Length: 219
Image (cartoon, rainbow, N blue to C red; front, side, top):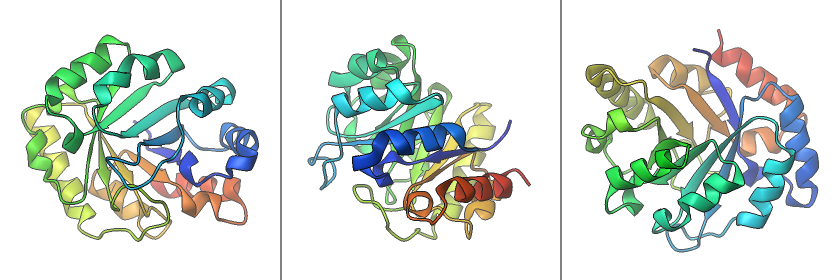
């Protein structure tokens, strides 16, 4: 299965959002990664349903939505109705994780679970077969442009062992500080999806930057 690049809309130019969405459409990117923040679970607010609705209207690729919010169950149906393909909730925000995963799937979406840097991958051992994708935060969630946390490589390796031991088909996504300097090592450790925000959108030529990342991960 090919490795995927998912540019993070959080780093786009919100005053030219349609332009940036269409750039991703025409690029070598595979997914749109969309961060929804509530200012409670993380100390920042990104954007809500009206903006997501407009992104989906113009996007032609997989919509990978990452909820950094408390009590995500309240909004699962709403995100399904908006057209999300993957819906990722934080382990740390879910009191009844298995129930939340089933709720997401009941609305026709793939279910993802995100882990903060301090959260052990072994906490997902009992639910890994119900998880379509694990998003490992390689920075502390809430802000773009942070430095990559080196311990992430070990977490990817550990998680891959759990997935293989359980015979699961769970994807591993890395979110935060991804660049051309660490992309290959992450893929070699077992990652399947790389989220890139500032590295893409702050570059001189985002389309070329995405193409460069895609070339690295497919070697």
